[in-house]
Length: 195
Image (cartoon, rainbow, N blue to C red):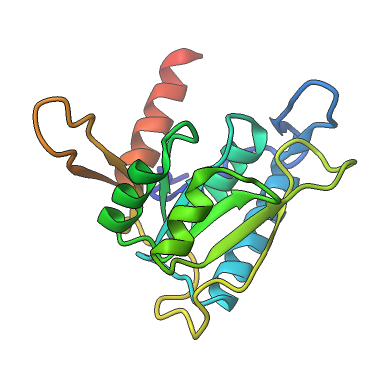
């Protein structure tokens, strides 16, 4: 089998019935369930005008939903996870610097990222989890930017999967992009070494 070149292809290597995500007091999410969620998320993003190379800021607490949101959004757009502990001025800087097309927050979150996005006129999508859903299962609600996504569908190997900012300790933080083929190759290689 060819080496995975994208997050979606990497997910395809997991056995359908094997556990992909788990959390205390939650049912496990299998790779089949995770792939189903990724397909639904991609369709939801595309229907709201978000496609490949569009930057989606994510502000969620650590946990299975953050992990699955990162993978699900990254499969068809560019993810930009931000630290939930930032204050509003920091969120305003990072959201503007990223050129975020939308922001994903937990449903009902009062994180200052919400106010920053509203001030910058950035649409907000809310991540909703059902009480009995498996670890990492979610749906997205909200309008998003609207219109038709210019680049619908799965990301290509050369598309950017992830954007992070440098720490900015000596100067202004810089954006660091990571392409799918680079991240998939590193994951496949590190997984092989850890076995």
